[in-house]
Length: 232
Image (cartoon, rainbow, N blue to C red; front, side, top):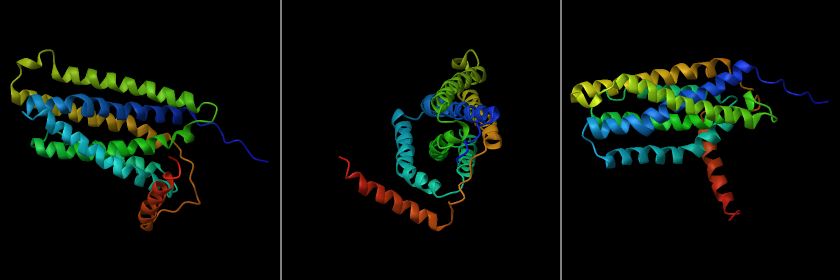
């Protein structure tokens, strides 16, 4: 006689949802708004430079995403991958604006690839904080709280920039944008920490991760692509 799995603890659900707020502050402040403004309005870069950089980062994750998914399918737990990708994203976010435009755009590519990779690890944890009956509701709450992260990022950035950013010198403006990037990295980490601590992932004892898992994951992706031809 099968036993029903216990319902996830409220603190685990809340912590998982809070991660959505964490990563949305990065998405809004860095990907959508303020880094692009730093490139074009502070550093004298062009829209094309920003667009090419963003496209490169998304192309990398487009190639890597299936491999990462196949890789984590072979691991007993996905949480270590989420922790690692988050720390990489946070670390390189904290470095934004600290060097030349070329250096910062390179930092962004790494941070965005790590952020995008983390999304798939995060989404894969949904079954560990929900049941079949409430999975849609928990997911929807995460999306809603994520929008709050956009609002929080906007408020924090507005406070840092001040009421009259147009009156600042280029060096003063660069310093304030640098502070926005620092604040965003800190918020990302702080709001992500509860997920790392309180979400208890179900361990899959039949899975084993080793160096050969990378080759196995690449072969798995190749097999998947070959099978797609059967479904025009």
